[in-house]
Length: 182
Image: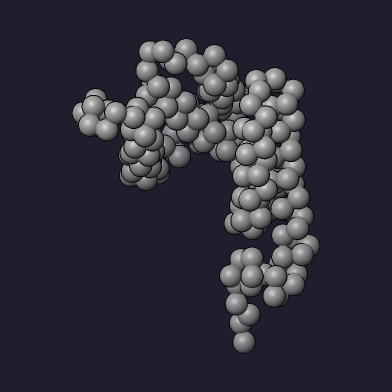
C-alpha cells in the first residue's frame, strides 16, 4: 500500500508522514484495547528490569537518531523502530517514575501542561527557525538550541503560567480561554 502511495504522488517525504500518522493511530488503537493487560504486565515487572528496559529502549532511539542506519535502506524502518522503542521505553519509565518521589513533580507539570504548550509553542518555533537559518551541523550550536528550547519552552512557561497566567483572570481568559464562573 505504501509503495502505491509513493508511486502516485512521487514525494516520499509526504507519504512517510501519512505512514507515520497511520502507524501512530494504529498503535493508539492497539494500546487502547489492551491497556489494562499491558498495565498489569508492566506492574508485575521488578523496578530494576523496568529501568534496564527503558534505558536500552531510549538508548536505541538515540543511536538511531545519531547514526540512522536505515537512511539509505528505508525511512519507514526508522519510523517504526523509533516509535516502538519510544513507546516501550517511555511507558515503562513512566510506570517506574509513578512510584517515586519524582511523580509529584510530573503531576505538577501535568497540571500546567496545556499552559506550557500554549506559551512555549511560538518561542520554540522561533528558535527552530533560527537554528535552521544557521544551517550548520556544529554539535555545540545544536545542544545550545536544545537547552534554549528546554528553558524557553518548559521552565519559563511553567513559572509564567503558575505565577501570572493562572493568577490574573483576564490573562487566564486570554491565554487559556477560561471564563470566570459567576
